[in-house]
Length: 183
Image (cartoon, rainbow, N blue to C red; front, side, top):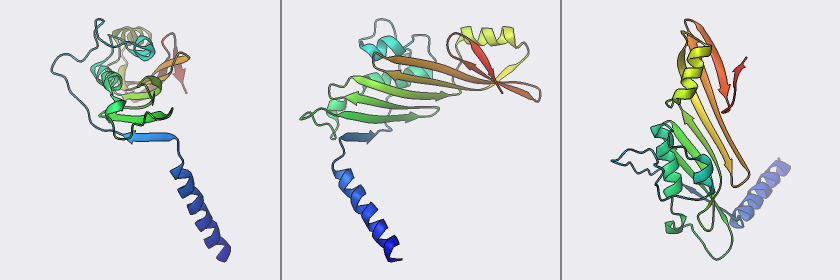
């Protein structure tokens, strides 16, 4: 029993010491702005940078466009956790109905990476038409759209779509090039 208590106390002390020297700042924000004008990002938008060029698509659904706009407009320098005295990265969580993202910013507010998940969004017409041709009389039951972005390295976009016909369901993956039927 003595060993168990000593072990627990040691773990607690180590975690406390480690937490005081953590170089990663974490801010959870659930505030969202809603726009009176259409939320699709337009080509003449003020945004630039690698994330905008790689990820943003003017034909995205409204849910995707809203979250991408929030990610682009996020001003790290106005947050109390911001510290410009040394290089650091800031992990910021965005969340709304059917959408969430975990975005890593550097001290300059540039996006280093993002992981975004959108559920039950409107599937782009090109994908919907392709499904309709390949699977006539099937309807879309659920959809998940995932984006994994790393600055100037990788961009992965994946749609996972569940279609239904009567009692039968099929799960499809679309990576921007081909469909793959799961299980």
